[in-house]
Image (cartoon, rainbow, N blue to C red; front, side, top):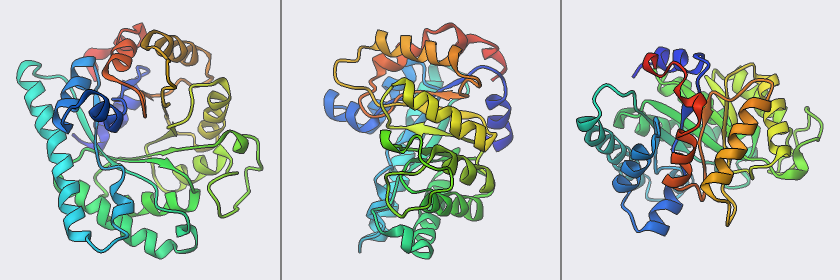
Length: 288
């Protein structure tokens, strides 16, 4: 799928439904990656995420060639699940996102190395056939900048999305703070990086579903000027019904509703199915 078609969808006024926590779903339900993808597709997901979030860190080690082959294999598992699903649901737009996770602490002082690692990651995802490069759980704005820059340089035809993780204590820190740790960055910093480096959307993931994080998302979107992304983690005992109620309330309360919604760690296919039942996911669906 083209970058243009995703951009059209992001501006449609109807959010796209992202999948949930691949790792937790596979572990808790004893599923393969393909089976987990298929479960999320059956739940209504329109974007499924290749299980590659941990490989950027793995590329800092000695087995780079093996790791890149595994990245391609993870993307292929998502593509195969999409093909299988579309056999019985032809014509439904399904996008495969290649996940790019954070690097270990310390790379904020080794930005050229970070750029090199992210170039290899972006090339592997693009060559394997991913539709989107999803830079997620970002913990340092300048390292995230390198990931976006690598995606733009290596795979200019693929849209890139930036999604950050924030600890609660960072929400109201100065928007110009540049300390070199993963705690204390303002959401506005990530918004600025997303805008400057050509992301098509920006937001938060792996954060708790709380009003404070919605406020952080508002700050990030205001700075970026881009469509928003929000896929929080699911606390223990947070039912699919409670999750859909929270997301529904957030969608209607936020000044600019997110263009991509879903779940992160702990979000099962049941949680995604509960979101899929919300009325705003059906607005103009035939056009997307």
